[in-house]
Length: 400
Ligand SMILES: Cc1cc2nc3c(=O)[nH]c(=O)nc-3n(C[C@H](O)[C@H](O)[C@H](O)COP(=O)(O)O)c2cc1C
Image (tube, rainbow, N blue to C red):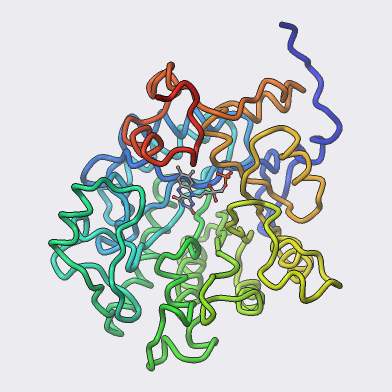
């Protein structure tokens, strides 16, 4: 087969460099979405398998965001979750950063605390913590044995005391310092997907009556304190070039949960901080806003409404269901996001950006191959087992 050597015009903007407000330039606007691999060593240090996984998915990209990485021992929500909780984590983190940077992409560490989504068997005595009382629900990706063991350990989350909340704010700042020391180019604060920061912002999960809960402003206090502590740590280090991004989920289903107006209000506060980008977590790039039909003067998509409100104050990263060249081109050409992130598509096609740049996007496929197995596709065994259990989340062909 002859390889095409010319990038197609619909991808040209995507492959232009992007310079952030701090002067740091990405070689292009394609990003690897943060993806948990369940593959760090038991003590949270980096493993060969995860370094191979992330390195094998970094070619041709402008930026790579790491797997959610715990900033505190109480925050661990996945078996094999990486840690950025003590100095001994730094050498492994450095190898993760280097495996990304070897391909020319900027390396960004995602800073995470699971809150009530942490797993009882992974956190120290004292247990799983939350803004308010919460009955723990086992996530779909864990095995039946772990589910049973966790239920035996703990069924209710413990409410965080004020001093503990302040300790967690400091833990995010400390993790950013470890990222700096490890040679990462930036960090992304994980304020999405139902984890601790979102649990504080949502009235559905935050029923506190102290300064960390109640009104919208007070529910926002914890996520903003974390973002401020991280940007202060970067300033103290004298590293204006270091990238700080913030990821959020735009809307929650429960009536008292986060709605678009809450998200736009959070954005208006986040843009006052020295951040470089915002990242909207979406299952599908084009998914409509909850009340899309109510206001036809606005575009229906969540991302379009956020982009319009943001009005260029920071670059916006979009994501969700972009697997084929046509999907990626359409997202880039929509004008709704300055940065385009790809997750599942990159597990399936590790070199998707290289293929697109070469005008060869027809070669992209839409499924992994069970016949090839995990190792040949540079997928850690633990991640492969989760993907098998979670079909068709990341589709696998020849799977019986
Ligand atoms: C295997 C896997 C692991 C993920 N882990 C994370 C994570 O650690 N942090 C995060 O913010 N999102 C995580 N996500 C969500 C992705 O970043 C992304 O938002 C989502 O998969 C939609 O994009 P996609 O269709 O391109 O995969 C994960 C997704 C997958 C498929």
